[in-house]
Length: 393
Image (cartoon, rainbow, N blue to C red; front, side, top):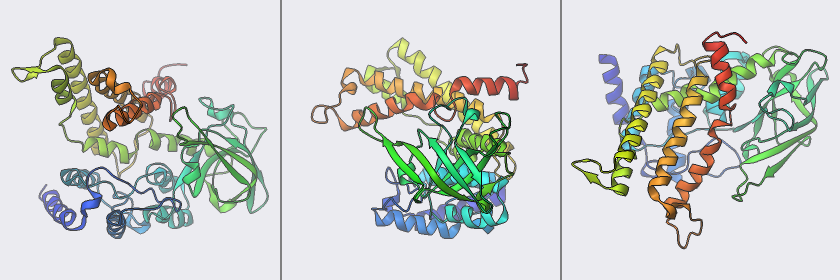
């Protein structure tokens, strides 16, 4: 315990000295993409200092650019960053998904190349999973990869590929044995997206934004050295990556380190008033109390998962529990926030609607999808039933 106290003191002093003002509070968090400019020089300074210390990926091994922190030290670091409002220096598909997967399944060469580049913010990734005819039934994917000796030639298409237009590399599930059963014959490969055989077409949403893309492969190339795991055994790797996506150590620790204070009661008091220090309306008081209890229970569950994890490893099928509960809790938060704001919060004209309300509305709409992406909550409940509770098919 004394060692952890010493670590906290040293961490607090280092953060105070090295985290610039422009890296505190809301603002840009780099993802490593070579296509995204870091506008604020303070953000660049903060990123460089965290890279040097290994704290862009604090729990990863030092030999791959990480900080080598224990879970307990990682929680202390996050708590101290929250104390001064320091933003993460780096976050993205690399740190939360493919990096942890390569640490488990990658070769030494893959770790030295790809994992180290992620830690040093030199690359951003995108996920090539869903296809036009393969969404929740991902194992029915049809994108083909033909073995050409030292490389694969890939043909097919992926859809709903978040951030592909800003990514440098893609991790993808491809079919390498079309005659095998559905879950077999799939391989997990890495490939650069900036090549002649890859075409990226943004999908415009009703909001006018285009965070998603359809990606077409026309004789695209993936090197054999970028095959992760065994040939035709990629389903195992792909499933593990989804566990990192749903509730990896990065998200679990961030939730576990969260302050127990929340703005929901204050929002309710500001909107409906208060009496004797309590929310005045009985209905709202009951709803907010229910949210608060559930939110704090969820934080404690995340903290327990972090403390029980070994060497910073993401839990297994129980991540589906965090995905289901976390997404529904998030949806309830934004529903409460929107309803408390009243009808004015639903405006879209920036000349007549407060900018804060517009931003809240965007988050409310976006998070309606949180129970669908990364595997729908219906799929997650099936996983919980079979893999966690051991119920029969």
